[in-house]
Amino acid sequence: MKLLVCIKQVPDMESRFKPDASGTWYADTDLAFRMNEYDEYAVEQAVRLKEQLGDAPEVVALSIGPDRVVEPIKKALAMGCDRAVHIQDPAVQLKDPWQIASIIAAYARNQGFDLIFTGMQSQDRGSAQVGVMVAEQLGLPCATTLVGLTFDNGTVIARRELEGGVKGIVRMKSPALVTCQLGLNIPRYPTLPNIMKAKKKEIATVGVNELQSSEARSIPVSFHAPAKKGGGLVLEGDVNELADKVIGILKEKTAVLR
Amino acid sequence: MKTLLIGEYREGKLLNSTYELAGCAGELGDTAAMFLVGDEQELPAFDGMLYLASAAACGEYNPEVHKQLIIETVEKENPDIVVFLHSSYGWDLAPRVAAGLGAAQISEVVAVQDGGFEVTCCNGKMRRSIKSATQRTVITIQAGAFQGVQAGTPQVVTVAAQVKNVMEFDGYEPAEEKGVDLAKAEVIVSAGRGIGKKDNVPVIAALAKALGGELGASRPVVDAEWVAHDHQVGTTGQTVAPKLYVACGISGAIQHLAGMKKSDFVVAINKDKDAPIGEVADVLVVADVMQFVPALTAKLQK
Image 1 (tube, rainbow over the protein chains, first blue to last red):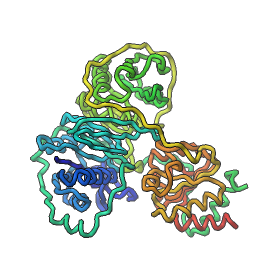
Image 2 (image 1 turned 60 degrees about the vertical axis):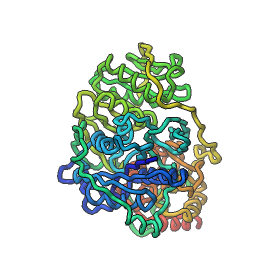
Image 3 (image 1 turned 45 degrees about the vertical axis):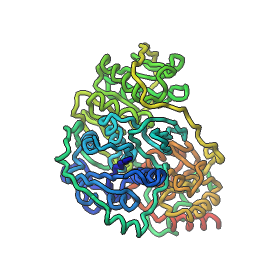
Image 4 (image 1 turned 135 degrees about the vertical axis):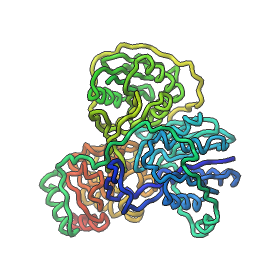
């Protein structure tokens, strides 16, 4: 049995984002990068499934991007993935979700993956398209936004998160693809022995040009901050003075302190 | 621009968010038709053609069948843009339809522009403008970004599917019972991931008590099991509108904002001046939440 987990490296979302030279995406200088949060749930779930099935499945982690994406790949290996593939693409940010999905599908096709895990979206682009489009290109059934997963004898039972806290229960046969949501699990921290062990695991590299790619279907025009809707007062300074100011404002503007 | 709107129906009811699609279509101009897997007893107030498939026959969640029906409807109606909500139904189905049509998909649109779409990115902090490079375009619109429009009576065309299921839908699991009814609270003080750790939750709860309010929480804090689910504010938790909402260390993901933006007065405490919570805050205190909150609580207790 073989499992594939697709991971993306994204900037820390507390960063200040500035447009790059093209003006259509953020400049990647002065940013701290990490594994996309939703992909951490995907890695954790794949590793848990491996453990549940007595370590039998092989778990492969895949990431597309420049050299720096080796960092989240190493983290995935330290969390328990068996080996990894780094699809080298220094210009990955210029590709649209359909193209990214095409690259993953080209890699995964005919490799016999029983289950493919992705995050439900990336924190930076947030299209929520790539996972589903990989499934479409590979002709696999796919369930999105999972907060629960059980796998039994080739049947996947997925708990999908819907609005208002309601869950939808979906059943499908593997091979299949699932996209993982916050709440599916609490990802483990890699332990030092596992970080050491991960150093010996294989990271294969593949040039993106070796995998067929399709034409972009959408074209980015600009990257910018949202227009300020105005109004809000921004307070900075010493916390004690700030507390006094806030109490003054609450007395003046709300009825809760009267 | 001719649009095809994909309405939503769940647990036997037309979802109100369907009307936001009509609001978006109004901004795109020209004519709109709607597609819905629903029931003839629950027709939307919509002035145009409605391609209606029976939820009883097709299943409320059955992406392979819904996709096929939408593609057949696109062939009949020939729209330029197919509009979904960016919801658990829309983000699941839209990429399948886009793939089937060979069309671009543009996700979580917050505004339409001349020849392009404004979308949100970087956890709601930034925006992008994106253009389609294909003849047809599939978009998903952010919940609440477009005003709902309810008007008229549809002309109904019944459609049915000839596709085999590849997935089985086993029904719904209800939301957890609410132990705390946040909707009735006049003051809510909510904890977000910025509080750092579970041990800090009592500090936030103490401020809630000092203000005579209830403790709320953002999604990540509930998922990390720092605070029980019945305190969760947002799309998948409770929707609230208190007189005062204090957001402590909450960056302001759209799912959270949707649950609290109708509050009368919002105070946000965040060390990131650009956090999206600033968009809905009347007062944004730029400070370390674990330094500011105890200082505020101490002064209120005096």
